Image 1: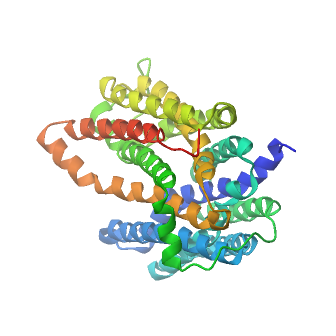
Image 2 (image 1 turned 180 degrees about the vertical axis):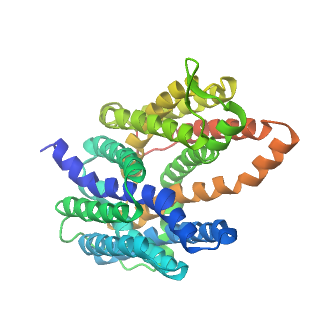
Image 3 (image 1 turned 180 degrees about the horizontal axis):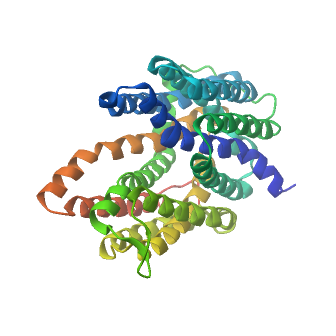
Length: 402
């Protein structure tokens, strides 16, 4: 029996809540709380420390929790406990009265998220037949970007504490919907040490290629996203359409571009996922990578805000195509059903590491721009385009996916 839209929406509900949660925490709540609880001269340093600490935990946590979930053959307890602790951590975060308490709340949030995310990410390979994984992946991609859109609206309209309450409530609701689909028990994995379990996927050529594909595409995305506001301020400057000024603030200009990217991604994800079930994953990855790679030079050739608005929508469409297929692609190549959560937990780090690397490009960007105006952005966007193309066409040698 084929699954209907309601089933796929329930499966993706926790991912929607997770996307909204991290959008609000990283872009709104955490910076605001750090500024509130820190001396002005230390707020950037303290915020950077929290981001760095969170990145390390996000790299280590999902594979560890995934391994424990595989060893026990259970997903439910991890998702249930992780979602409850996440809700508690969000409430502690928005009510923290000192930087020390804020740090503890953020650590709890990271542990809780890792506790749920590693096992949860195994649900598509666990539960979805190969012929429907593209559709499932498409729903995951659509709800991921819709969570970010709603996060933007909530962050704009609500004060900090109600933001935390709403994120906690949606986290519990999303977990409840997804938990209904999770079986009580799965085959537990064979006796294997933690280090053996972590090493095994890297000896699989197909898994390694899938990981590199996502790593490079995400690196291209975060290189472009991280410094886009500075590009608008330094190069584009005028934020208007048909001669009329929309805003004078770069952060508002980049927010509108981000909204259009998310809208395009949401529109493309489900149709692209369904298409990949019919024609295969690789053609959609090629289309996405080629489209994203070709668009990047136009950011440099057409430094006008009205044209960038149109490019943002097309960028979102191609990005949505990629989001629609990436979960399905990795699910297709996993070999051992008893190691799904471990392997998917490792695969999830292919998002976090590129974020860290993109942040490390800030200094070279400044140095190149100091040498020649705009040179840093030229190198940045051309690199991003190259990573999109390379990441997409690395799927060609993959054997266990078409």
